[in-house]
Length: 236
Image (cartoon, rainbow, N blue to C red; front, top):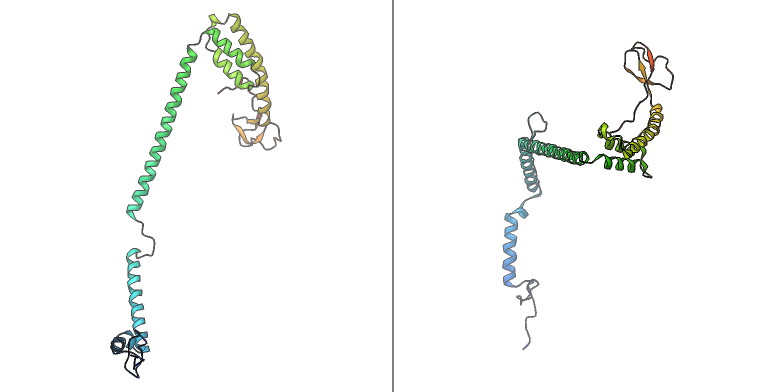
C-alpha cells in the first residue's frame, strides 16, 4: 500500500503530521531548546550582554593585576629568586673548584714528567750525553737555538774530570760554534725592539734605542744609553 501521508520531518526524516515541517518528537526538542535559549545567554538583550562582558573583563583585569602585584616588589624593581641565586652561585663555585682541581692535576703531571725525564737524563753516562748532543747539533732541519739548548742541557751536567774525553770535547766545540751563530741571530732580533735606558736605571716607556731621543727620560734624570745587548743565548 502507498503512503497516504508523504510529509517527512526535515530533522529526522520520519513521518510528520500533515501540513507540519517536523515530527512530534522533533517539535518537542525544538521547543525545549528555545526555552533554554530564552532563559540563558540567548535570552539576554544586547545591553545585558554588553554589561556581562564588561563585568567579566573587569574581574579578569583585577585578578591579573593582583597576581602580578604578588610577583613584583612595591618599588617596581625585579625581585630576585633566592633559590635561583643560590643555585647559580653553587654552580659557579663548583665549576671554579673543578677547574682549579684540573689545573692542579695538570701541574702535578707536568712536574712528575719533568722529574721522570730528569732522572733519565741524570743516569746518562758522559759518552751517551756527548753522542746525543752531537746528534742534536748536526741534525739537518732542526732549529739552531733548540739544538743548542738541548746540547747544553746534555753537556752541562758532565763533571770536569769527564770533559777530557774526545767525544765530549768534540761536542763542546760544536756547542761553542752553534752558540756564536745563535747569539748573533738573537742580537739581530733584539735590535728591532731595543729599549732606551734612563739614568735612574729604568727603561723609557715610550722611546726606543733606534729612534729620536728628544724628550725621552725627562722625568728619569735623562737618557743613559741603549738597552744592553744579550751576552748569552736564552734557553728555556
